[in-house]
Image (tube, rainbow, N blue to C red; front, side, top):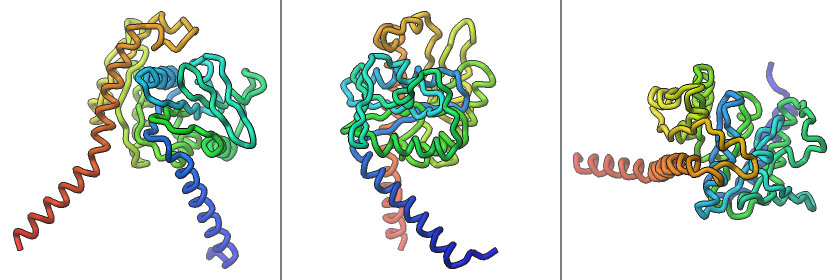
Length: 288
């Protein structure tokens, strides 16, 4: 059925409004240099623990770091990072909490009861994420680490389409099903033409085994950043574990080295493409 002129104009107005909102958000976030998502289609693989410890580790390296808990219905990043500070909301603007030198915003900061179930449909999650992104004054950041919601539907899709992410770190555990879901999340990122930086294997050790993360990375042609062992150190919740355990900090040394190398590689890609095109043009000119 053909659209009426009124429907066509309404549709055009909606597209224009969406484009303007995306442009305004891009301007608002222009002071953030690099945005990294920590992601898996499966919950329970330690994605939030990895995101929090990565953010705190980067802050310890002297970077200005923010942590966005984009898992709207089951937000846990604020609990994992601890520290006690909470965001300040004034005149419709959110000033992030600051814990362990990391600026943090999470839906849990705005819940009256921590154990309250957030039962929202896709459009409400979409609006909440957009409000977080538009209302939060992050300031100048070297890195924004985004703790992604699990799955491959509305919530992660909203984040990927709204934020211009520089890349994703896929988290898996050694179990077969976790590897399968990590593969699904990687394929989703690729379909949206965003870079997958690499793979981290969490909970490695005698209990769950090891090697699935490396096998997944090799099979999909991705960089393997290393493993995070299942350690008793994580039972100490006074601070993020990367601040407590030398062994965990050494693991994040390895992970950061891999991420840094991949970001450098991605940053160089446009120059490499331009150089290749210039070489082709020069070869064509010589042939003529």
